[in-house]
Figure 1 (tube, helix red, strand yellow):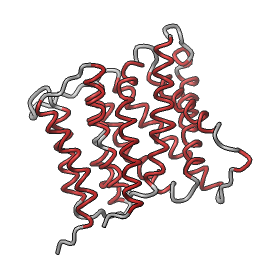
Figure 2: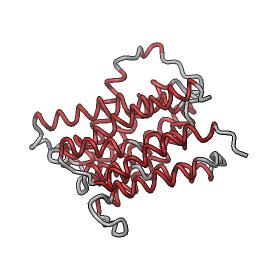
Figure 3: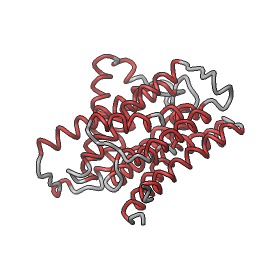
Figure 4: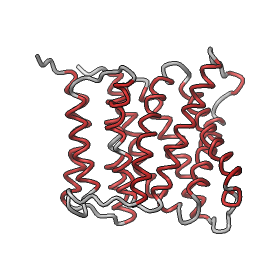
Length: 298
C-alpha cells in the first residue's frame, strides 16, 4: 500500500502545482507593467518578508549555521536564475506554452539524479516518457507535432527548466537537514536580494522605473508573491520532505495542465483536442508514478 506520508506529500505538491499553474497568467499580465528583473526580485522579497512575519525570530534555532547559510544561499541563487529566466521567456510566449516548457524539468531531474548517484526506480522512465509526450502534445496543440516552432521566449523558459530541476534536488536535500519554514524564508529573501543587487548594479534605471505601475500591476505582484512564493514554494518544501525528487518532479509537472486551464479561462488560450490528450497523458503519468513502484513485478 502507498504510505500515508507519501499521499500527503503528493497532495501538497499537487496543490503547489495548482497554485503555480494559476500564476502563469498574472505573470504574463505583469509584463505590461514591470520588467522581468523588477517583478521577480520584488515578488520573492515580498513573499519572504510576509512569511517572516509569521515567525518568532528569537525562536529560530539552526544546528549547523554554516551549512544552513551555504544551502540556503545556493538554493536562493538557483531559484533566482530559474524564476528570472522563466519570467524573461514569458514576455514573448504564451502562459500555456510557458507552463509546458517549464514542465520539461521533469526530464532533467532523473538525469541530474544519475550524476548524484541516485538511480530512480525503473517505473520512473515510462512515466517520464508519458509526461514528456503529453507535454509535447500540450505545447504544440496549435500545430503539427513535427513542427515545434520555438521562439526566443520558449528558449528562455527551457533554460529555466534546467535550473528548476537543479533547485528541486537542492530543496529535496535541504528540507531533510533544516527547519522547512525557516529555510524557505531565507532562500526567498536571498533569491530576491541577489536579483535586486544585480539590478541596482547593472540595471539601476530599470529597477526604479515605476512610471506605468498601477493597481493592476500591484495586484499581479501581490498575487504572485502570496500565491507562488508564500503558498506554492512553501508547500513544495513540505511536500518534498515526504516525496523523493523524481516522483516529485512528475507530480509538479501537472502545473502545465493548470497553466493551460487558467490560460484558456482568463486569456482565451484555447486547447484543441490534441492539447487535451496531452493534458490527460500528463495526469496519467503522475498517477502511474505513484502506483507502479508499489507493484511487485518480477
